[in-house]
Length: 558
Image (cartoon, rainbow, N blue to C red):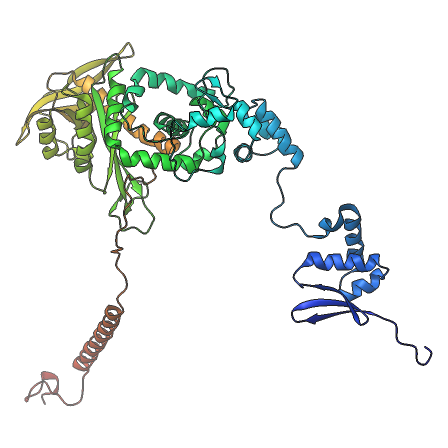
């Protein structure tokens, strides 16, 4: 360099007051936040575009020259937006796949077919269609009220002003115009569930649900809410949360709606109904209507309880879990089913024995069946004389197993038969009449297998065939199967209650003073034990001088 000529400018990078400053000689050309990678990349590309060497820029920013080259390639293809690193989880569906899903949904294609076409799950398709917002013109075209098309927005507003809604926290998806389907043909992946409408019609469910308060509703009235909840469980949803995985348009067609309601609509609607009605009264009314729809009313019902374990922090009473074979907190659900395997009524309460939990459902059964005679079958958990006396007083016939030890029959066995599915079945039984205090006359049936008494049955029925009564009690396994399938398909093992109250936590906590006193007591006990051992050693040790008595002992008396 010649004397007097200034040094050439260089690229420098310094931190000033928490900001990164890139300078060209004495002039600052870029100032950005060090955490802003997008501004950093923009500065890199701008410097290389202005003529700076890529190697020099890479050394300045402590990066590899290859990375500088990739940044320049991104900027040439996508501009400055390509220099910003992507944030969050990458999109699962492209714009083309979303457009294809919307087009197939408009063509009434089932959700499973849409999911297969764009290679995603049906739950993803359901969420995608639920978030779809239609243009206002399309909303007007799709809106139908009472079967009459209303293309004019003023007419729609006037019609919707007739009923003022109050759905609580409704979701954004409910802003769509959701109306009843008047007629037409709809495709649904759940068309098989339409058989449930035949059951509703036969039992007269409209008359049962018609007594419920209508309340205020904009789009989902009481009938729609009840149908949505019922069909949701029928389609395999074990809870309301499970209904979000259903295809809303396909499931909505089952209940005559354009779409299934969102969870944020369904929850407050059902909560409002639960506050206004007596669920027990509705349950009894529906069961009564179901039995009255039969050609011949069932005469035998089975009652049993089912323990539901609880692992939360609420201070619940403990019960015996027959599956795990130990006691743990939980509740007892007591269920009554008829001879056709149908669940009739139930109750839920603190864990106890069947002899105590059966009375709540039996009171419901008496209301359902009226004064007609019915027989109740149960297992040894309720086989107590006090239970027999209460059943006789309530007007129930009953049949159960005798608790061990079995008694030797006082009569000789003989053959009895019963016709099942057109065939006679013979068993060897010994039937006799017993008398119990406070119960009166009852019948004991001893069933023989290989010449030995296998089991004994107690019943209040003194006239029916012994084989028929034995077959009736054997059918008690229907309630065991009901528990099994209700657990598998409807998750009755979940803890459910119509009430939710705050209550103080009465669980015992560790007392530090008690722990300290326990440790002191343990130390004192150890000291006493050591003293007792020391006394024992001194008492059994022989010494040269006898201290037993003044005269000495025989061994040292000399």
